[in-house]
Length: 484
Image (tube, rainbow, N blue to C red; front, side, top):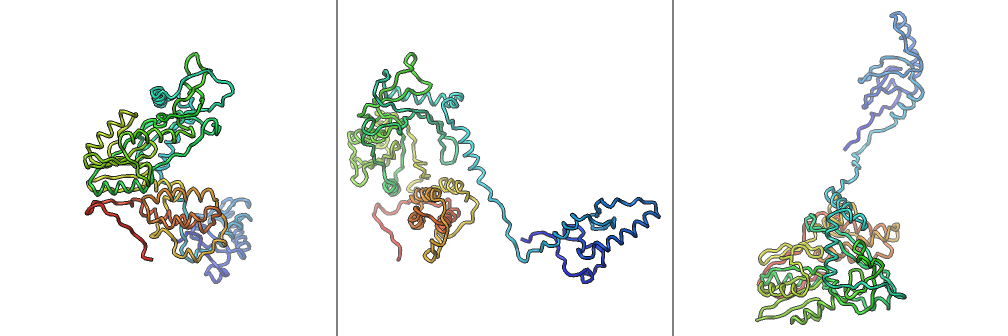
């Protein structure tokens, strides 16, 4: 695209076909004056016109007034131009027309719907109890959270003990969204500030296991081959079910202090969200219960359980407070009833959104994608309008010398690598590129940053890609490898 600009004139006036003192019109519609002869010729023309004006009885303008030009460039007055106007016109003639097409530079259009969604989330999530207490929807969910704590008999209110450490607390608020971006529910959580705990006094062991993504993908493959449906359940206030062994005191929840005992504190009987040992306590409780039901743990993954009833298997995967269940429908319904009798459960039904994974289920066919997650990454790093690439990595990577490039922000680089590592679960095509780029997180340079953004450009063109599981000819173990 050519950029518009003034036409260029060069050489003396005689060579341009114009008489001395005549004006040349530019492409902008402004008359241009020759810098070497314009002064003398304009002055002479002006004197002649003054004489004619006197004879006709027309008053000539003052010398300080500017010369007026018509839109077509016709000179209505031969007055001498002021010095500032001469300089301006001289500068205008020095702007040359571009000799080759010039790319238009513009700021990328942001992903409007995504930014609008983020803005609405930030506006609707209170940052303090006082702000939440002024809205009815948040008062209701806080009351629901407090009722759940009382139902589970999490603590008892006692006088503040002397010489004991005190764990502080606060309310947290979150708007949870579904895979399509719509609001799913409002959630309030009363949490302990774990950073105020003292090791050896308020807690000991904190480690707890979670399910592997390979286990989740494996049971999805088995479900597709066997023609089963994948069901999902959620444990409400899961951490409140775990028993703790340490003596822990915590402040009463703001807005729900017991009348007449405002100076008292809560002595915990069970775990509370935010405590360092909360996850370990919950896992110990649910693991004991599942094994009591007859489930057996897989040695390779302690969060993968199975049971065989009447030659029909039932498989359960535990990921913190989310449970994924596959098997015969009658066994699944029986398992759901048993779990609901022991814990406060939410039956989500068929799995459609699990840990950022979008799941589409059909008979003997499952599709796993992370399209929404990719859009979030592109929006976070302002790459939603970028040009897509056909490969996840630049071809001449080994020929580049990283030491020749300047350093970049390591924090931003590590954040992007972390996002991409979570995406590898459903996008094995970027596995090698992400693995290679993750080796430079200590001292990333410009060439590494460009290579990582190349991965984002590749993802931009295939946002809707994912893993496809189909029913074939029976359960079998298969492996794949590169040709080289």
